[in-house]
Image 1: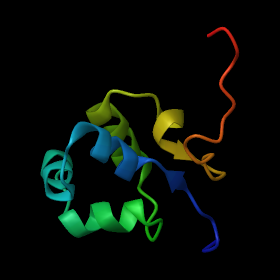
Image 2 (image 1 turned 180 degrees about the horizontal axis):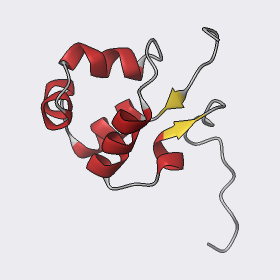
Image 3 (image 1 turned 90 degrees about the vertical axis):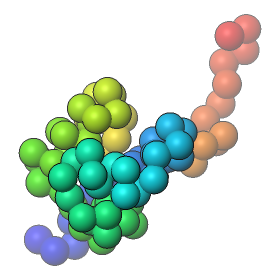
Length: 82
């Protein structure tokens, strides 16, 4: 089904770590434009590529990918006394 969307946090993770699209692409062995397509949701990665992305950032799959949109940063309530 072509309307299936996979949401991701690749751009956020890259920004947090100060990594360029080209640096990530080189590490993953893909073209830098592929990283842009992934970040914009224009391309869904293969399972193998998705797992390599998670391995690169050293985070679980659910931190990077989701079937529903991620909540915007700063919209999640902060627990009192935390």
